[in-house]
Image 1 (cartoon, one colour):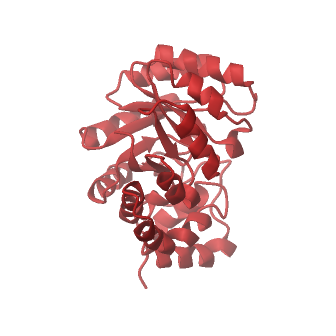
Image 2: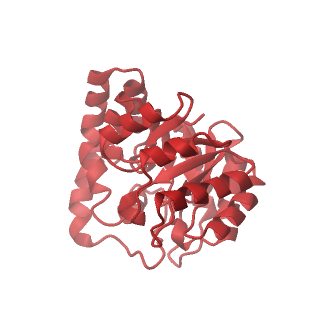
Length: 293
């Protein structure tokens, strides 16, 4: 279930910051039509830090209703508090989601033992599978492969989204974890090589704007077709980087608005994309086939 190109989907908002449920439904339909293997609701790209628990639950419930088990729906449930994460995991487990994505606690910088106990507590409380999420550049803490391997022995912990963008990290995770434990790339720029090295797929930002292209590239890499995967990834290379010209999801939301898929809406403290980046991002979108003309 947790393989292929999964999208860390952006959360559509109105200019005043209110959730745009019509655009949410349309985005999900678009991904269903364009080979996306799963939708991560309320991840980093979904502005998880500014969503209330009620908003997150509503988005996840609506995604489940729209998808109807055709692809995976994964809800982001992490926070910097173990007690709050446990409570959120229990609530979201009552929905028909396929898994919960739990990010390492940000700011408080726990030890590896603290990380182990945090994720173990969440796994004990949840009624659905857990995907660990390691993104040191956002959280300030690195969930090391040895700790992931310990956690992989626990009931319900089935995968890791690894955002540390080094292929040797993927190889080490594959070496230390059980064969049925899924390693997923969390970095679009290195996702092709990660899958060629044994990752099962990617939880992608780029898939927000070119879902079919990402799905085809990841599928080729999963089959071990290096030359084809490189050829499919080449037009996307500049986009992988351009979507991080400013803090994610600022560029991706600007791109989706430019493509006519959402309105202009983002919540403070994030702001709209600086105009000096418009030409660079537009060029990358055109090169990737997301914009015509």
